[in-house]
Image (tube, rainbow, N blue to C red; front, top):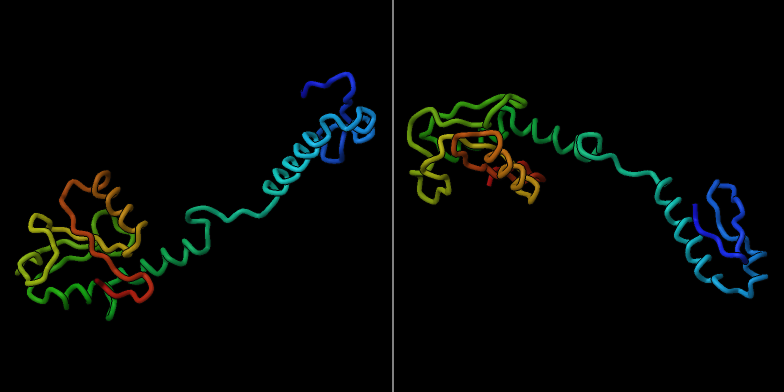
Length: 168
């Protein structure tokens, strides 16, 4: 409970918080009035921030759900999606694609010409796996975390534009 002085009495407010009584503050000659008003204002702001509707976090956030659904759609092996784009980029390479939601990397090199052997390729020579990620700071962080914690094999990040769905 807050300390009180001889001239300040705490009176209950409707929110069940206690604040100095304005009558007693006036009686005290205004001493401490500014401090009490500032404390009262900060309490109101605190109450307001607690009652404001907060955005749901993670998968409960509708924007995150939409982005995840779009990512799953782009990962599916259908015309125009990321697997087809990867085959077009590396036509002499045989790939195996995991279905969206399956454990492990999205892509593994099965045979043919290794992607690192194509001119202008950024694919690492020692990577026989690839994982599609949006070309965003969050996509990069997720890839780095997955490489450290999920996969033992060296993996190539396969960035795509999250707005257009085009492989970079």
